[in-house]
Image 1 (cartoon, rainbow, N blue to C red):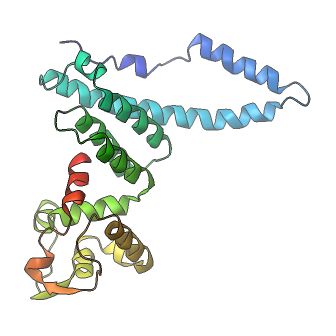
Image 2 (tube, one colour):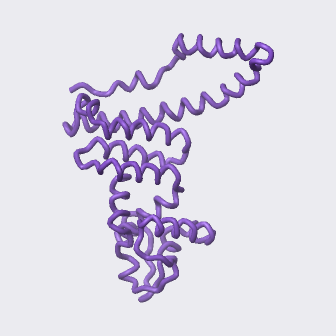
Image 3 (tube, rainbow, N blue to C red):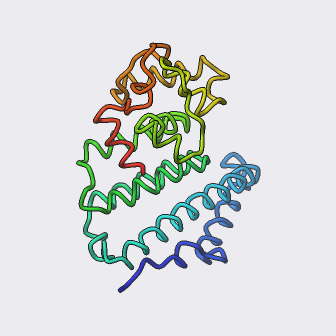
Length: 231
């Protein structure tokens, strides 16, 4: 079965037409008033890292899609006709240029994969979810994944759960991600953001609950859909 050509996305040598384009811009920049060679130097400093990010994103997406093609889950022809998938790839490429953190890039890659599936959410959900990833922090994503199923999260990550009979969500976070507790201003801001967006159920992190309640699902149905889309 035909796969996605990953070599086309990872050129080892700068294409000749792009080289001519670059030289042409440098020549124009040398003309007085119109521009300066310094502009070309500045552009070169940014172009290489940005092109590398774009290439790395496309290679990661392509490798994941080839796995799905091998499994018979999707076909290349089907992906080309899937408007939701094509739109998601275009948006993810743009978003990835503005982000460098591995967890956000992984979430974006997963969003592309899920957009290729028959279970892809509607355009409204997909757009809202991608916008969320674009502006959120990695801590937003970590907290959502933690509170989608806290009990399972502690088991999967080999962390010790708090054993008090009554605890708060902030104590759960302290046990799971102590680095987040160190800066309460940031944590409170992130949690308020998740609550305002309708992604978590409990408004106050300091609210005292039973241990069983704190270690159960705290995300809303909307939050769960977002976690699934990014997983």
